[in-house]
Length: 77
Image (cartoon, rainbow, N blue to C red; front, side, top):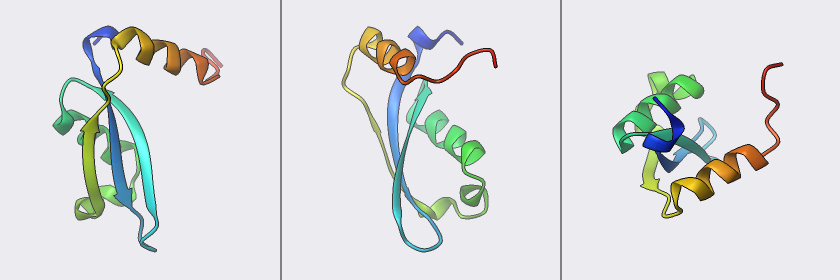
């Protein structure tokens, strides 16, 4: 799905040592964002109850795309 059709979500979770983490996901729904998080963080596949929250980002889609591209993630390597 094109990035412009997705929303930006911040998902908070705890690891096995009870340290809090946040990760950003692009998805159509909060449910999809949580499912992607489970794929990205293998610990959460077996322990989904470690997920604390999933909240949408209130930025515009253009701002989200700019932030994503400005993060310096190498593409095509």
